Length: 237
Image 1 (tube, rainbow, N blue to C red):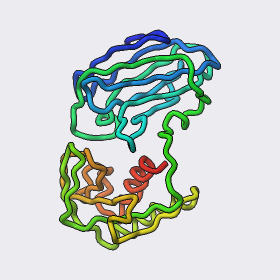
Image 2 (spheres, one colour; image 1 turned 180 degrees about the vertical axis):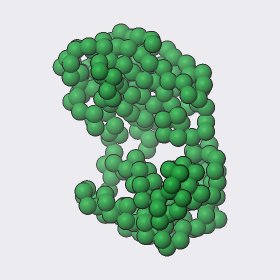
Image 3 (cartoon, rainbow, N blue to C red; image 1 turned 60 degrees about the vertical axis):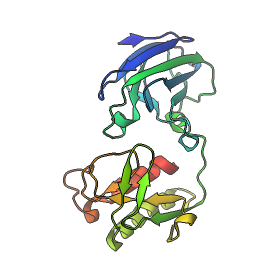
Image 4 (cartoon, rainbow, N blue to C red; image 1 turned 30 degrees about the vertical axis):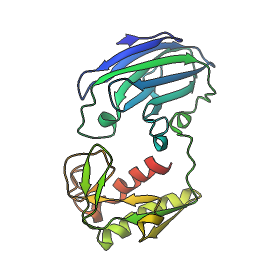
């Protein structure tokens, strides 16, 4: 267990895939704080904040992924006085992947900010989704590359598409948003990509072989629903 004072910077190093650094910090009830985890030689920080009771109160992966800012930042208003705990980790460990993401980072703790104390505030990326989201189901044989991995798609069948649209409908039921299927990729806001490849997670893809789904979810008719809900929520929530 490490520690840091408000107004200081903690310098850390992830030396393995499973490495999570814990840093204690004393906060005062009613005060606002900003915690910023910046990559030095690691790739993609992931920061979590736990309260004096060790319960998770806030977390953040990217400050603004749409602008390629993959550092992590939490703004938080302390709900009580006591020792809080920051967990410095990596996106690839917390959200899945095969990249070790070892290397150095900096964790700055500053007083100030406009935190409300609400956990949802800390995972807001400052992005507002459109009211209509055009969804494109990529056909087989296309290649996508995000700079880390290259994925070649397999084709969605009608059952897979139907299950995906059913998952989208659950967001429509509770949010002011409409998902519309398009067949022209140039009109798409969101790409649905399926692959049979079993390594490499730089791109958000659905794996037909169900490698990353629960063991009993071996078919789209069983398991596509929740695996579709999760990445859509990450991207547009």
